[in-house]
Length: 226
Ligand SMILES: Nc1ncnc2c1ncn2[C@@H]1O[C@H](COP(=O)(O)OP(=O)(O)OP(=O)(O)O)[C@@H](O)[C@H]1O
Ligand SMILES: Cc1cn([C@H]2C[C@H](O)[C@@H](COP(=O)(O)O)O2)c(=O)[nH]c1=O
Image (cartoon, rainbow, N blue to C red):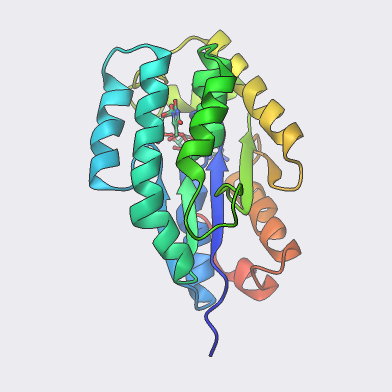
């Protein structure tokens, strides 16, 4: 039997928007349908990239250094994890990818998006892709939530890292950065209205998967966030 086509789905949104709560549920849903799932995250996803993650989240540095470290980790992650999984026909669910770099380092920190676009070209070209084509997610679920609501959720949840400790104005810019990325790639982005119950958020996610023919309605109804 022919292996199914690999699927690359990323999850984006400001800190506290509710992504993590739903990624495991979507992995369960795909597995219930017989798919092999690679669940991963950025920054991180490989031993090297996880070490870079620790630096980015906890050490003081400027925006260019942040950008170089997240793209270095992304290169390793693509080569060692994402590309091989897609080649095997797996579903790759990734908690954040390059849209986060444009939103956080670009819009949030005010770093030059031309430089980010150049790094994106370098890092996301791959041997398996036609010349000039970059590896991008097949779909990006953008959890849209007002920064004040996200901040309230996080305050109740855990101690903040370097990004989570940023003021509301930073997250307003990051939010605007995501809106800009979504407007530039409407076929790839699916907006999830995240100011809703977990069940309502889950229904939006599964509806998007069913619309693309990636998940059967029956399976979507049987699985949900834990
Ligand atoms: N729909 C929801 N309604 C209320 N609270 C929620 C909802 N979804 C998630 N939460 C809670 O909000 C907090 C943040 O959720 P979660 O960690 O899933 O967000 P996240 O987008 O993954 O954040 P980060 O990117 O910072 O890791 C958690 O305490 C979680 O239980
Ligand atoms: C990929 C990526 C991430 N970030 C930031 C965004 C978040 O604040 C953290 C990751 O924490 P999470 O709890 O795993 O969501 O890193 C970034 O600034 N740039 C990036 O490219």
